[in-house]
Length: 283
Image (cartoon, rainbow, N blue to C red; front, side, top):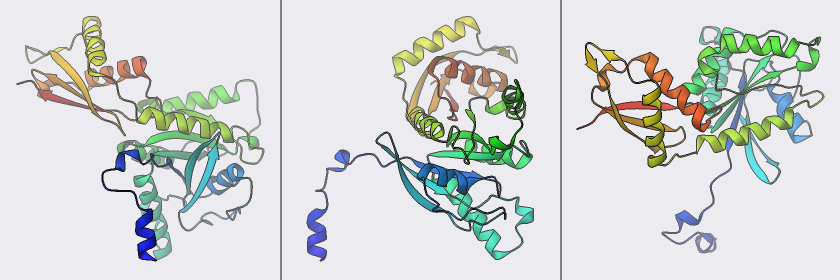
């Protein structure tokens, strides 16, 4: 049997011909926000137990789905709770598995409950995914339970923008797993985020952009020293990393760093993707 299996393995040196694995998508959120219902709605059959009892899902489970020929692996996770509320071995294991799924995924679909609104725990989960460099989609679930008026969605989105001011690049969808409103749209957004997370900008293009940006708004003088950004490169993706070479990297201000990130997004997109900016001294 081993001889037969070995014959099926690719030859040494052919790794570059192996296709890229499907995106790994973690469905995360507080307990009872509708994660299993969301996965069931996508798959089209009840693969998960769905009840009103919080914490029904006890482990992370993989489900492979296909969207217009593109395969994704969904990980339905148990609800992520605050550590202060994890007081049983089972709850502790549940939280560890959820954080492990978030750590290993490419894109995180963070579900929040439309009936309860955005709470501190939702923000913590999004920030955790952002710190880990994961693509992020914020999905407001149970939208069918909200009484609608002409500006309901706009008001809710305004609240989200206020609560997630530092994460304005995160796309937000209002979904209903019961009637499948924008459920499949979420897969489209997830695939787009996955592509954005792999995007690489050529160095000549980046440096043309940097020259234009500094002409519009040059770096501020700090401690009577004029800062100058000489050039920029993108050495990594997933998440995208931009390294700026300059004369005084230790003097880079938070405001100008945020300005550079905003201009990068305005020019190149990167919706739903955290960006990493590093500053190095030019020798």
